[in-house]
Amino acid sequence: MLQAGAFHADALPMQGTSRAMMISRAVLRQVEPGNTANCAHCGAPIKFAARMQLRQVIANVYQEGNWIRVEHYHADCYDEAGQPYGEAAEKP
Ligand SMILES: [Zn+2]
Image (cartoon, rainbow, N blue to C red):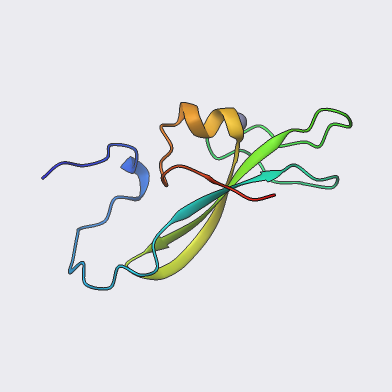
């Protein structure tokens, strides 16, 4: 069986795949003032910077249909990490 390769830290044994509705997904958002999240890839804070239009990727992580956490990434870091939760959907 082929693995995506990027799930090393959280790999769980695969069970039935019938409940596949709630899956991990990622969206691309503007970084807003007061944002305090750290990047899950490089560990650095994702800081708002005036006039820079920075973007972050916010991923909702599900395992076996259950939401377990949110991860934040710098937009560039998410690409560098190999888009572990799929291509980030753009949200205006
Ligand atoms: Zn980063």
